[in-house]
Image (cartoon, rainbow, N blue to C red; front, side, top):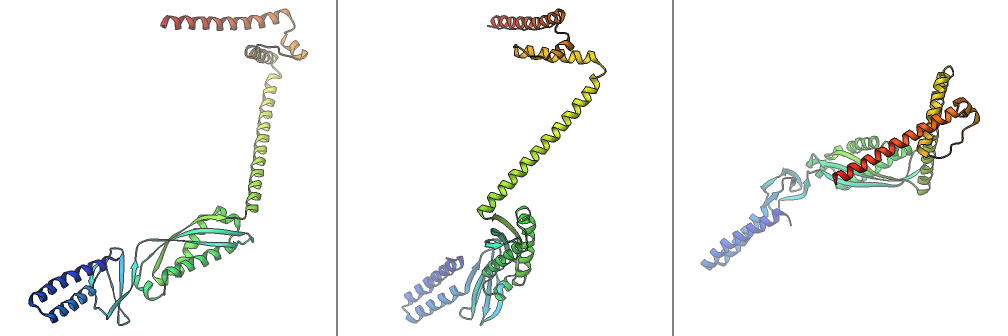
Length: 305
């Protein structure tokens, strides 16, 4: 029930109560009838429009005025209100099902339209049902845009399509006193078979990029090894120290047998007693230092306890 109806009913009861009570006190039947008619006329002439509403008033079929918001009066029987126009922002969802794109792919598209009435007079007088007209105009505009757009552009450029739809729909609804604020594409559904094919294509593209990156990394590593080889080619002492360090690190970490080519053994002079002794002493000193550090840590822990 509208607020104006409730307020009019209250006025009707108050007037009927006052004059009806007076008629009862005077025991006058005709005054009772007059009080009833007066209450009915006054209550019918009082209307109340909310802040977001505008009332279109017609007098004997002709446009009389646009009333609201707040309290206003009309002449009963002569004046009528065929439309109460809501001027707030309204959202309408619309869709296009099984519509072919420019590259003949059937798609289902869901969208949302944000609009508001800026001219209630045009919305009431220039179109029979402006809400239904906006819905149909939105659907036809969406189908037109889909038919002119490639599937790839539709999936990647939703913002561009939304802006184009807003422009088209706004041009169509402007004569009706409606302003389109924005259009948002919610979802684009494609056939499952095509979706699987596109997923496989994307996966293959990612694998190709991974292989390209791996190959480029191998090339960069090879270039760095080439530069290192040029550094060691005229400096056998540096090469010998590097080889010794690599072998020492391997034995220290793994503490196992390492198979080394004989040419590398000769180059690092590990075949001689001096080389083996130096390597063994280095490993022994490293282990002794590690054990000493562990013992000191245990003593420190016991002292704290």
